[in-house]
Image (cartoon, rainbow over all chains, first blue to last red; front, side):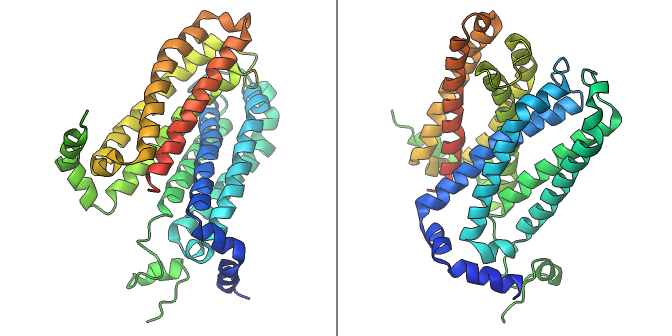
Length: 185
Length: 158
Protein backbone atom coordinates (compact mmCIF):
# COMPACT_ATOMS: atom_id res chain seq x y z
CA UNK A 1 0.00 0.00 0.00
CA UNK A 2 1.34 3.43 -0.89
CA UNK A 3 1.74 6.07 1.81
CA UNK A 4 -0.95 8.13 0.13
CA UNK A 5 -3.40 5.22 0.18
CA UNK A 6 -2.57 4.63 3.83
CA UNK A 7 -3.23 8.25 4.76
CA UNK A 8 -6.44 8.23 2.70
CA UNK A 9 -7.58 5.30 4.77
CA UNK A 10 -6.49 7.06 7.96
CA UNK A 11 -8.57 10.08 6.97
CA UNK A 12 -11.69 7.89 6.95
CA UNK A 13 -11.15 6.54 10.45
CA UNK A 14 -13.79 7.76 12.93
CA UNK A 15 -11.33 9.51 15.25
CA UNK A 16 -9.69 11.41 12.45
CA UNK A 17 -13.08 12.58 11.22
CA UNK A 18 -14.17 13.53 14.76
CA UNK A 19 -11.13 15.71 15.44
CA UNK A 20 -11.33 17.21 11.99
CA UNK A 21 -14.97 18.10 12.34
CA UNK A 22 -14.90 19.25 15.95
CA UNK A 23 -13.95 22.88 16.08
CA UNK A 24 -13.18 22.71 19.79
CA UNK A 25 -11.03 19.56 19.64
CA UNK A 26 -8.92 20.75 16.74
CA UNK A 27 -8.44 24.26 18.17
CA UNK A 28 -7.63 22.89 21.60
CA UNK A 29 -5.00 20.48 20.25
CA UNK A 30 -3.56 23.32 18.20
CA UNK A 31 -3.36 25.48 21.35
CA UNK A 32 -1.67 22.67 23.27
CA UNK A 33 0.82 22.51 20.39
CA UNK A 34 1.53 26.24 20.85
CA UNK A 35 1.78 26.10 24.65
CA UNK A 36 4.17 23.16 24.54
CA UNK A 37 6.11 24.99 21.83
CA UNK A 38 6.69 27.79 24.34
CA UNK A 39 8.10 25.25 26.78
CA UNK A 40 10.21 23.34 24.28
CA UNK A 41 11.32 26.06 21.88
CA UNK A 42 11.73 28.69 24.62
CA UNK A 43 14.05 26.58 26.74
CA UNK A 44 15.91 25.30 23.67
CA UNK A 45 16.61 28.87 22.56
CA UNK A 46 17.97 29.78 26.00
CA UNK A 47 20.15 26.65 26.09
CA UNK A 48 21.47 27.38 22.59
CA UNK A 49 22.27 30.95 23.59
CA UNK A 50 24.18 29.57 26.59
CA UNK A 51 26.10 27.17 24.32
CA UNK A 52 27.00 30.14 22.16
CA UNK A 53 28.24 31.93 25.27
CA UNK A 54 25.75 34.76 24.80
CA UNK A 55 23.85 34.52 28.08
CA UNK A 56 23.96 33.19 31.67
CA UNK A 57 27.67 32.49 31.43
CA UNK A 58 27.96 32.02 35.18
CA UNK A 59 25.60 29.07 35.08
CA UNK A 60 27.42 25.78 34.33
CA UNK A 61 26.20 24.15 31.12
CA UNK A 62 25.71 20.88 33.02
CA UNK A 63 23.25 22.68 35.33
CA UNK A 64 21.16 23.56 32.30
CA UNK A 65 21.27 19.97 31.10
CA UNK A 66 20.42 18.47 34.49
CA UNK A 67 17.73 20.90 35.58
CA UNK A 68 16.13 22.21 32.40
CA UNK A 69 16.50 19.35 29.92
CA UNK A 70 13.72 17.33 31.60
CA UNK A 71 11.34 20.28 31.01
CA UNK A 72 12.54 20.62 27.45
CA UNK A 73 11.95 16.91 26.84
CA UNK A 74 8.48 17.15 28.42
CA UNK A 75 7.69 20.05 26.09
CA UNK A 76 8.90 18.03 23.12
CA UNK A 77 6.81 14.98 24.05
CA UNK A 78 3.63 17.09 24.34
CA UNK A 79 4.46 18.78 21.03
CA UNK A 80 4.98 15.44 19.34
CA UNK A 81 1.72 13.97 20.66
CA UNK A 82 -0.34 17.04 19.78
CA UNK A 83 1.46 17.27 16.43
CA UNK A 84 0.67 13.66 15.56
CA UNK A 85 -2.99 14.30 16.44
CA UNK A 86 -3.07 17.39 14.22
CA UNK A 87 -1.62 15.32 11.38
CA UNK A 88 -4.07 12.51 12.12
CA UNK A 89 -6.98 14.96 11.83
CA UNK A 90 -5.93 16.04 8.31
CA UNK A 91 -3.63 13.28 7.05
CA UNK A 92 -3.82 13.52 3.27
CA UNK A 93 -3.50 17.28 3.01
CA UNK A 94 -0.67 17.36 5.56
CA UNK A 95 1.20 14.55 3.82
CA UNK A 96 1.06 16.44 0.54
CA UNK A 97 1.82 19.83 2.09
CA UNK A 98 5.19 21.18 1.03
CA UNK A 99 5.78 23.00 4.32
CA UNK A 100 4.95 19.88 6.30
CA UNK A 101 7.52 17.93 4.32
CA UNK A 102 10.13 20.63 4.74
CA UNK A 103 9.39 20.72 8.46
CA UNK A 104 9.89 16.95 8.78
CA UNK A 105 13.29 17.20 7.05
CA UNK A 106 14.37 20.03 9.36
CA UNK A 107 13.09 18.06 12.34
CA UNK A 108 15.23 15.12 11.28
CA UNK A 109 18.29 17.36 10.94
CA UNK A 110 17.59 18.99 14.30
CA UNK A 111 17.33 15.52 15.85
CA UNK A 112 20.63 14.55 14.26
CA UNK A 113 22.22 17.67 15.74
CA UNK A 114 20.88 16.76 19.20
CA UNK A 115 22.25 13.24 18.81
CA UNK A 116 25.71 14.41 17.73
CA UNK A 117 25.83 16.98 20.52
CA UNK A 118 24.89 14.50 23.24
CA UNK A 119 27.10 11.69 21.97
CA UNK A 120 30.22 13.65 20.93
CA UNK A 121 30.27 17.10 22.50
CA UNK A 122 28.41 16.95 25.80
CA UNK A 123 30.33 13.98 27.36
CA UNK A 124 33.39 16.29 27.61
CA UNK A 125 31.37 19.01 29.35
CA UNK A 126 33.38 18.76 32.57
CA UNK A 127 36.35 20.35 30.81
CA UNK A 128 34.40 23.44 29.67
CA UNK A 129 31.39 23.52 31.98
CA UNK A 130 32.03 27.01 33.34
CA UNK A 131 33.85 28.48 30.35
CA UNK A 132 32.41 31.80 29.29
CA UNK A 133 32.55 30.75 25.68
CA UNK A 134 32.18 26.99 25.22
CA UNK A 135 34.50 25.27 22.70
CA UNK A 136 33.82 25.52 18.99
CA UNK A 137 31.94 22.20 18.56
CA UNK A 138 29.49 23.24 21.31
CA UNK A 139 29.02 26.68 19.77
CA UNK A 140 28.39 25.13 16.35
CA UNK A 141 25.84 22.72 17.86
CA UNK A 142 24.11 25.69 19.54
CA UNK A 143 24.02 27.75 16.35
CA UNK A 144 22.77 24.82 14.26
CA UNK A 145 20.11 24.02 16.81
CA UNK A 146 18.92 27.63 16.84
CA UNK A 147 18.76 27.82 13.04
CA UNK A 148 17.06 24.43 12.61
CA UNK A 149 14.41 24.95 15.28
CA UNK A 150 13.63 28.42 13.93
CA UNK A 151 13.13 26.71 10.57
CA UNK A 152 10.88 24.08 12.14
CA UNK A 153 8.69 26.74 13.79
CA UNK A 154 8.49 28.81 10.59
CA UNK A 155 7.62 25.91 8.30
CA UNK A 156 5.18 24.57 10.90
CA UNK A 157 3.33 27.88 10.93
CA UNK A 158 3.16 27.84 7.11
CA UNK A 159 1.45 24.42 6.92
CA UNK A 160 -1.83 26.25 7.48
CA UNK A 161 -1.54 28.03 4.12
CA UNK A 162 -2.75 26.28 1.00
CA UNK A 163 -0.73 28.08 -1.69
CA UNK A 164 0.91 24.88 -2.92
CA UNK A 165 -1.88 22.44 -2.14
CA UNK A 166 -2.59 19.61 -4.53
CA UNK A 167 -6.19 20.71 -5.06
CA UNK A 168 -5.02 24.13 -6.22
CA UNK A 169 -3.82 23.64 -9.76
CA UNK A 170 -2.05 24.60 -11.91
CA UNK A 171 1.15 24.43 -9.88
CA UNK A 172 4.66 24.35 -11.31
CA UNK A 173 5.86 20.78 -12.01
CA UNK A 174 8.52 21.08 -9.35
CA UNK A 175 5.88 21.78 -6.71
CA UNK A 176 3.75 18.81 -7.75
CA UNK A 177 6.86 16.66 -7.72
CA UNK A 178 7.88 17.81 -4.22
CA UNK A 179 4.37 17.27 -2.88
CA UNK A 180 3.84 13.90 -4.68
CA UNK A 181 0.78 15.45 -6.22
CA UNK A 182 -0.85 13.99 -9.33
CA UNK A 183 -3.30 16.61 -10.59
CA UNK A 184 -6.59 15.01 -11.57
CA UNK A 185 -7.34 17.15 -14.62
CA UNK B 1 -16.13 53.86 25.56
CA UNK B 2 -16.51 53.51 21.82
CA UNK B 3 -13.43 51.85 20.42
CA UNK B 4 -14.71 51.36 16.90
CA UNK B 5 -13.36 54.67 15.47
CA UNK B 6 -9.85 53.88 16.68
CA UNK B 7 -9.99 50.28 15.43
CA UNK B 8 -11.41 51.52 12.13
CA UNK B 9 -8.56 54.02 11.82
CA UNK B 10 -5.99 51.25 12.38
CA UNK B 11 -7.76 49.10 9.81
CA UNK B 12 -7.73 51.89 7.22
CA UNK B 13 -4.03 52.74 7.51
CA UNK B 14 -1.91 51.91 4.51
CA UNK B 15 0.05 49.46 6.70
CA UNK B 16 -3.10 47.48 7.42
CA UNK B 17 -4.20 47.60 3.83
CA UNK B 18 -0.81 46.54 2.47
CA UNK B 19 -0.73 43.48 4.72
CA UNK B 20 -4.33 42.54 3.87
CA UNK B 21 -3.64 42.77 0.15
CA UNK B 22 -0.54 40.64 0.29
CA UNK B 23 -0.52 36.85 0.26
CA UNK B 24 2.79 36.50 2.04
CA UNK B 25 3.05 39.41 4.46
CA UNK B 26 0.59 38.22 7.11
CA UNK B 27 2.04 34.68 7.38
CA UNK B 28 5.63 35.96 7.44
CA UNK B 29 4.93 38.58 10.12
CA UNK B 30 3.01 35.95 12.05
CA UNK B 31 6.08 33.71 11.99
CA UNK B 32 8.22 36.45 13.48
CA UNK B 33 5.50 36.88 16.10
CA UNK B 34 6.06 33.21 17.02
CA UNK B 35 9.83 33.73 17.27
CA UNK B 36 9.16 36.57 19.69
CA UNK B 37 6.82 34.34 21.66
CA UNK B 38 9.46 31.61 21.86
CA UNK B 39 12.18 33.98 23.02
CA UNK B 40 9.91 35.57 25.60
CA UNK B 41 8.78 32.14 26.81
CA UNK B 42 12.37 30.98 27.26
CA UNK B 43 13.35 34.01 29.32
CA UNK B 44 10.14 33.82 31.38
CA UNK B 45 10.48 30.09 32.02
CA UNK B 46 14.11 30.18 33.15
CA UNK B 47 13.20 32.68 35.86
CA UNK B 48 9.84 31.14 36.83
CA UNK B 49 11.11 27.55 36.99
CA UNK B 50 13.91 28.81 39.24
CA UNK B 51 11.39 30.57 41.49
CA UNK B 52 9.32 27.38 41.64
CA UNK B 53 12.42 25.49 42.78
CA UNK B 54 12.42 23.18 39.77
CA UNK B 55 14.96 24.99 37.56
CA UNK B 56 18.53 26.25 37.86
CA UNK B 57 18.45 26.07 41.66
CA UNK B 58 22.17 26.60 42.19
CA UNK B 59 22.16 30.05 40.63
CA UNK B 60 20.95 33.07 42.60
CA UNK B 61 17.49 34.30 41.54
CA UNK B 62 18.67 37.89 41.08
CA UNK B 63 21.53 36.82 38.82
CA UNK B 64 19.29 34.68 36.60
CA UNK B 65 16.60 37.34 36.37
CA UNK B 66 19.18 39.95 35.40
CA UNK B 67 20.67 37.68 32.72
CA UNK B 68 17.23 36.78 31.33
CA UNK B 69 16.00 40.37 31.25
CA UNK B 70 17.55 41.55 27.94
CA UNK B 71 16.18 38.45 26.15
CA UNK B 72 12.79 38.99 27.73
CA UNK B 73 12.72 42.60 26.58
CA UNK B 74 14.02 41.58 23.15
CA UNK B 75 11.27 38.97 22.86
CA UNK B 76 8.60 41.45 23.92
CA UNK B 77 9.86 44.07 21.43
CA UNK B 78 9.79 41.47 18.64
CA UNK B 79 6.24 40.50 19.61
CA UNK B 80 5.06 44.11 19.61
CA UNK B 81 6.88 44.96 16.38
CA UNK B 82 5.17 42.04 14.63
CA UNK B 83 1.91 42.06 16.59
CA UNK B 84 0.97 45.68 15.89
CA UNK B 85 1.10 45.24 12.08
CA UNK B 86 -0.93 42.03 12.42
CA UNK B 87 -3.46 43.94 14.49
CA UNK B 88 -3.68 46.73 11.92
CA UNK B 89 -4.42 44.16 9.22
CA UNK B 90 -7.44 42.77 11.05
CA UNK B 91 -8.32 45.24 13.78
CA UNK B 92 -12.06 45.22 13.06
CA UNK B 93 -12.19 41.46 13.50
CA UNK B 94 -10.24 41.83 16.77
CA UNK B 95 -12.70 44.34 18.22
CA UNK B 96 -15.44 41.70 18.26
CA UNK B 97 -13.11 38.83 19.07
CA UNK B 98 -13.38 37.47 22.58
CA UNK B 99 -9.94 35.78 22.42
CA UNK B 100 -8.31 39.07 21.45
CA UNK B 101 -9.55 40.72 24.62
CA UNK B 102 -8.50 37.78 26.81
CA UNK B 103 -5.06 38.14 25.31
CA UNK B 104 -4.84 41.93 25.68
CA UNK B 105 -6.00 41.93 29.28
CA UNK B 106 -3.60 39.10 30.18
CA UNK B 107 -0.79 40.88 28.36
CA UNK B 108 -1.45 44.18 30.09
CA UNK B 109 -1.52 42.51 33.50
CA UNK B 110 1.53 40.31 32.96
CA UNK B 111 3.68 43.20 31.72
CA UNK B 112 2.83 45.33 34.73
CA UNK B 113 3.25 42.39 37.07
CA UNK B 114 6.60 41.34 35.59
CA UNK B 115 8.21 44.76 35.64
CA UNK B 116 6.90 45.86 39.04
CA UNK B 117 6.07 43.14 41.56
CA UNK B 118 8.03 40.23 40.17
CA UNK B 119 11.04 42.38 39.44
CA UNK B 120 11.10 43.63 43.02
CA UNK B 121 10.81 40.08 44.32
CA UNK B 122 13.67 38.75 42.19
CA UNK B 123 15.94 41.71 42.94
CA UNK B 124 15.30 41.78 46.68
CA UNK B 125 16.66 38.33 47.47
CA UNK B 126 13.60 37.72 49.63
CA UNK B 127 13.08 34.33 47.97
CA UNK B 128 16.02 32.72 49.78
CA UNK B 129 14.21 33.18 53.10
CA UNK B 130 10.65 33.01 51.83
CA UNK B 131 10.60 30.86 48.70
CA UNK B 132 6.79 30.77 48.76
CA UNK B 133 6.73 34.45 47.72
CA UNK B 134 8.77 33.60 44.63
CA UNK B 135 6.61 30.58 43.90
CA UNK B 136 3.46 32.66 44.03
CA UNK B 137 4.81 35.28 41.61
CA UNK B 138 5.95 32.49 39.26
CA UNK B 139 2.47 30.95 39.22
CA UNK B 140 0.82 34.32 38.55
CA UNK B 141 3.28 35.05 35.74
CA UNK B 142 2.90 31.61 34.14
CA UNK B 143 -0.90 31.72 34.32
CA UNK B 144 -1.01 35.16 32.67
CA UNK B 145 1.48 34.22 29.92
CA UNK B 146 -0.55 31.06 29.36
CA UNK B 147 -3.55 33.31 28.70
CA UNK B 148 -1.53 35.52 26.35
CA UNK B 149 -0.32 32.59 24.22
CA UNK B 150 -3.65 30.73 24.28
CA UNK B 151 -5.71 33.86 23.59
CA UNK B 152 -3.36 34.76 20.76
CA UNK B 153 -3.69 31.37 19.12
CA UNK B 154 -7.47 31.52 19.51
CA UNK B 155 -7.80 34.88 17.70
CA UNK B 156 -7.18 32.99 14.49
CA UNK B 157 -9.91 30.43 15.13
CA UNK B 158 -12.86 32.75 15.24
